[in-house]
Image (cartoon, rainbow, N blue to C red):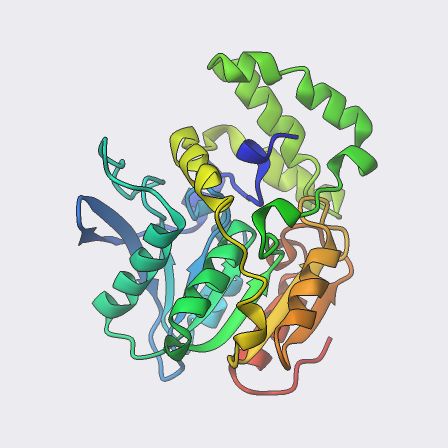
Length: 306
């Protein structure tokens, strides 16, 4: 499966999700782009910022789960769309779209919100972003959660699609030509095939996939970032981290093999490692109670239990 499409994503900004969570966000003007963000919740706990998967997708898929709203009962929880995605503005011709921009956008959002320190979670490709941000701004992070993340070196991310779902991959690849030519029907067919492969629980899979008609993906954003990633290797940075870090993965994550999460955990001193045994790439959706308990205990400084 082509990295430029599937990379570490989750992804459906669906009508059913929109109905569940009405958003009331704002725009942060940064250089020549605007970054959409929303803050939910108030309370005394450290603000919690979420960086979604992609690249090229908005944050709407995070709303498949209510764990974030439940966390927002005693802390601000921040969602945002990365530049060029979702409700953020399109990227004008000649304006850069790089990993450095992602780091600087996140730092600008932190400063705009007035957070001296914040807790930070990155899911899927967002895990790569938060590792990069932590390498540049470790003093700003109180707790770091890396969930089903891409590898610190982009090309080392291990996909299991071909080995576990060969028949689905054959169907998926049959639409490659049309997708490359801009045939939306072919792209939609690939999305349907792909989304089937992200879950442990068939009921959760069907619930998610059946609502994916409003799926939004910005190819130009994905292509630009994929081209930029080849320059970087974050592996030498991880042993320098002195941030309390939780690394989590779904046992049946086909999109990013759990071995990737294990290696990240082993590289970060004193990090904690948790596997959700009945999840694929979205443990916050498939095992919300266990995920919420694990993350809340970690953020609140308690011993993480399963």
